[in-house]
Amino acid sequence: MRKKVTKAIFPVAGLGTRFLPATKSVPKEIMTLVDRPLIQYAIDEARAAGIKEFIFVTSRGKGALEDYFDTAPQLEAELRKKGKDDLLELLKNTNMDSGAIAYIRQHKAMGLGHAVWCARRLIGNEPFAVILPDDVIAAEKPCLQQMVEAYEETGGNIVAAMEVPQEKASSYGILDVKEDMGSIVSVRGMVEKPATGSEPSNLAVIGRYILTPRVLSNLNKIKVGAGGEIQLTDAIAQEIEADRPVYGYRFRGQRFDCGSKAGFLQATVSFALSRPDLRDELAMFLQSVVAEQRAAQ
Ligand code: UTP
Image (cartoon, rainbow, N blue to C red; front, side, top):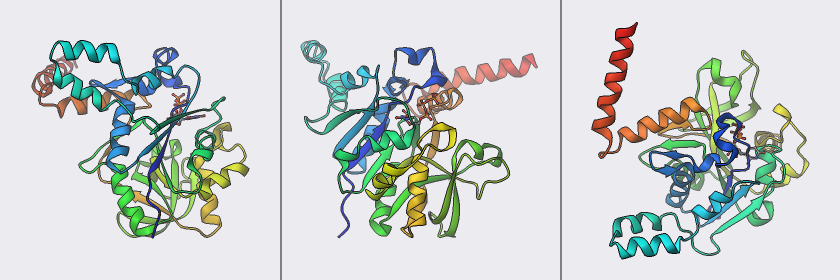
């Protein structure tokens, strides 16, 4: 029997420089899409996939994240007094059972691989998921749940993959595909941020992973890679070199890169348009903006 994936790491220790000055005092993961912070989307996705232990790799200035998952007795008492049961219900989703959530500090932003490695003692000898909250995925079946189901079939290491245009490939880890089996591809190699023209395929790795604990052992020995950071991709690629399986999983859904301003805005519009309470008003506004722009051209 394969061990179930019940632990997830959320690396949230990055500096978020693309959103300065906002991220000077607000963690990127607390920024909101409509009315929910990015981290709530990630947590909901993890819960849907059966995750029971939530491990945050944080850094200085991320205190708002810890408060977000705590109870808020004063606010809750006030809402109860006013009979706002719907809002109390909404807040329930933001609470975590005692012991279900852990925070580990990454003392220096040395890269995603290093952030994941910081959580090694809490993972132990089990398969685990990694979720990057700035990749938000709108999907009928949440992306991590799709991946857990694939993992139950294949085992090994699984990275979420999506097709990207060639000119964008140099911003991602790119898969070298051994065999394409449709939603799953087996992987011969992975290159982090390849120079344009040298990319082995158009399949890019995005921020969802299911990994074996061996990847953590690999991280013990990994040296600084692309961009002067310790790369998670390098530690996964070592599994391939050791002849252990790594798969790419073409998830069904739409991914928004909320680590970039354009992606964040697109996600905001898209999520707002999917909300019955906002859809009509926003659609009308967008139409008028586009019409004005056309007229001005
Ligand atoms: P990014 O590459 O988006 O970096 O990290 P960043 O610092 O968050 O943002 P920019 O590029 O400066 O605007 C991808 C994910 O990896 C985490 C980030 O928090 C984010 O979730 N990360 C990155 C760490 O936890 N530690 C690191 O050292 C680097």
